[in-house]
Image 1 (cartoon, rainbow, N blue to C red):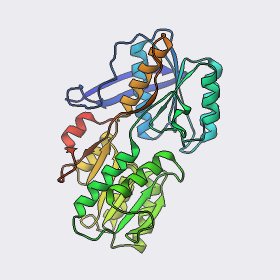
Image 2: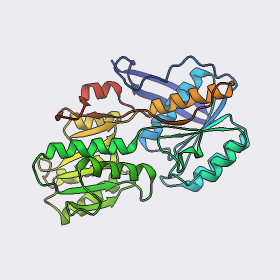
Image 3: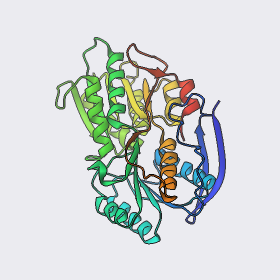
Image 4: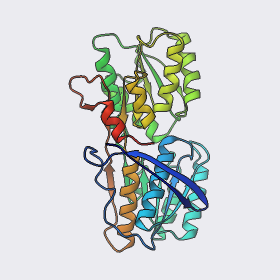
Length: 339
């Protein structure tokens, strides 16, 4: 059964209403790090997300607030003003360095945008962990706790292609932010899973949406004006998928076009259950945060510092399984979703 928690946690002057949808741990393949018996009294940690508004990062902040309180950790939560705000993230890191925190968890806007600030933090003995998005090079940080976004994209692509079967693919791609690390991995992974190369004539059109529902809807409307025979849509995330669906529904093409997505938010899983898109690939942002906090506490208390890439998992969620692709249904998804 899903569990829901609610609390009011003060984080550096910002009151956060915590409301997370998760699992009791029985069936959640990613429920391995959260809940570890660690004692974080006196440990201070900073969390820097890409934005304060994207549901994925809202969940990260809420879970971090709750889990930090449980562990006795002092948490400072900061964010960029918009997706792609590298300067804002650098300023946030500099603020945390000046505070002398023990560790910083950051979801970089791109793989190299905050490397200088990360180097400065690590030179002062601060453990730096990348969440969700790897840096380039990966060893710029102590460790990365994230979805394998290339694999998540590959799963989305393989599923959508399997649904099409022998039908000739006519694909539209709704990407995120140009140059974004996660965006690139998911895009490239989708094409590999779908069996296409960049520039293939089966790709009818591509637009950047910044992962925003309204922007995605407008982009999809524009692309459908040129390509009404499309039969498949890649979306960078679930808000983009909802925007795509709205445009497709308005043109009466829902029976013609298969939409895939990535995220695993509770609203997205419900969208799959309602038939708005065929599948989503679930991530586990709460697990990224919990494992990151545990790792920093361990290092701050004299234990082994974290290192390397830790894949926090991804699972295809659909009520229409296809042969050769492991998946869970939306009932399972609603028990294990976030946000």
